[in-house]
Length: 297
Image (tube, rainbow, N blue to C red):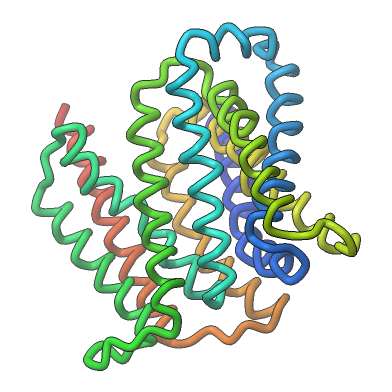
């Protein structure tokens, strides 16, 4: 029963995450990246506060913050503030069908960074996964013209790859966080809000944003930054076999490409699909390595 529930929660999270690349592009038609960040962060903060209240942990929010105020401020500056600002700008500069797979390589980046900052050993399979993944990144970024090495938007590609460093760095810092994960995420959003709103009021006007923009950014706040994270955590907690749940995430980028094509009419370049398959193959190699190490314990 628990496994069936876990798969249901996991599938719900994956399906919702599959829609956010489309939602990003729709929202960016009406808002600047910093406005999108500020509004979506506010929606996420409210959603996470409601979840924490339902779980009975909201009363511990202030105590949790007082235990490590600078630590939570640093987490909030990395995610959501800098990470999502960089990611949204990458989506603003690139077709979503390119930005999304490039960002998807963050798990490979995490392995490399964990070796540097946590002293974890990099195996031959990790190196193979990294080689496949980053070869896929180059294929996507150059639209398959590897010899020319010409990028449609060098800044956009650079920002998409920078987002993988920021996200991996955030999770490395989170390994030292023993607090409730929902409270930790909520604190990051709350602490980032003054910065994102101050920057948005300074750089852009909030007037004349149509209701479609507000609906789109509300969707992003709920289902990219907020509720979906809780669904995924619940799935992982209920699963007796977490590998079966974590493998569901590999469905997401392919569904995302279909939605981008069908909903906003974005043309999917063959090199994007080829590069994405290479990235996912690298991630699957990493998963296989983890399964082997767990089974040998």
